[in-house]
Amino acid sequence: MGKAAASARVIDEWSRRVEAEYRSTAIAANMALWLVQIGASPDLVRAALRIAREELGHATLSHAVHVAACRAAGVEPVATGLERDSLQLVRHASEPLEHDVARACLEVFCLGETVAVRLFKELRQACDVPAARRALDRVLRDEVGHRDFGWELLAWLFEHPLGRQLRVLVVRELPALVRHLRSQYAGQDDATLPRQDARWGLMAPARYGQILRISFEKDYVPRFARLGVDARPAWP
Image (cartoon, rainbow, N blue to C red; front, top):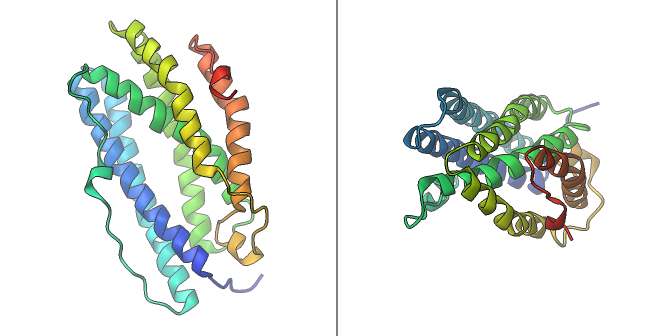
């Protein structure tokens, strides 16, 4: 196959993934603390802590890919900083903590990690650069567990003494969260991608929106339905 050249797009994308994985590490650790504070099942607490550890592993692997891409392009890796406010979950002090747990569970794990499984599966299809393939293989394997954690936690929350309130909150906020996800991919209509970039684990921007739509129909709708929530109005 030969050695794959690394474009500026590849370098930027893997730098972004390092940041995203570090952010996910912090969010999972924050969720573990919140679960302790609301007296959640020890299994859920342990799962959140495991996710934080796995996300840190993803960040390490992603950084190795970023460095490899920089070397392939003959440039020096540049460290970037993260906004500290992005490394924590938002707390609404006027509401019970359970409300914020439900919001984070819904946005980060039920929505974000569920579509991530399909996205990473697609990203690895044409990826054959060893460092990138190792990273994507590991991430995809772990993301399945992160997705399942979200749905297990949401089911637990619906059985909580505040479960009726939390169900109302989820139904109320689901459409806005889906719109936000769709807006992240809006305007990304480029359906082409250089073969060299695909070898590094990238995909055409237009595929993101297409995969989100598939995930909504095949993942979100049936999974919410099993919990008694009709998600279909969230995508008019």
